[in-house]
Image (cartoon, rainbow, N blue to C red):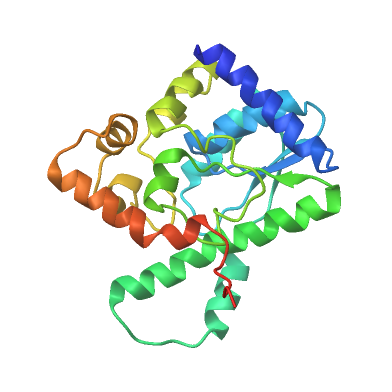
Length: 242
């Protein structure tokens, strides 16, 4: 399937999924990254008059907002901004502290950000009668690189069958601004954070293993271990069989 045909199939799929559930539009968090930009454009094609991009800075890099606005303006996507800095600080100030490993503390605090964004998106979606579209791709889903009940808490995942390299190809086809396509992927959880550094794995190696099954022994073991550890993120909570 060529990339233009894929884009049209995804647009039709979004429209069908949303309307089948009695909803009339889509809301998506626009982070300034390539994945959310691609999903926002696909949603805009599916629902030209009822797609809303939500920017939710939370001590975020100003460049992220600039890139989100760049994509929104180019494709005439309606947006709203909800700044979460004060909400984040209020919650942090009221939560108990359990001293553990520094990296665990940092991750616990960082994961609050996507969870606050999830709450925000659903609040807006509920008011409008929209569905929440997520931007997770197959590469991220495979290794569990998303926050449970955060950016993983969505209604539909249009990019869920596409690895990162395929998302980039789709972004070029859709005309996503080059600066968004070329910047290092980041969840924006803390200053200087990048996906590949946090995963300890390049998207190139990950994508190649997913698509072909070929990889170095080190990459294979890492991906399989990450996939096993994150299995709970990709399924509903277990229920006893008795």
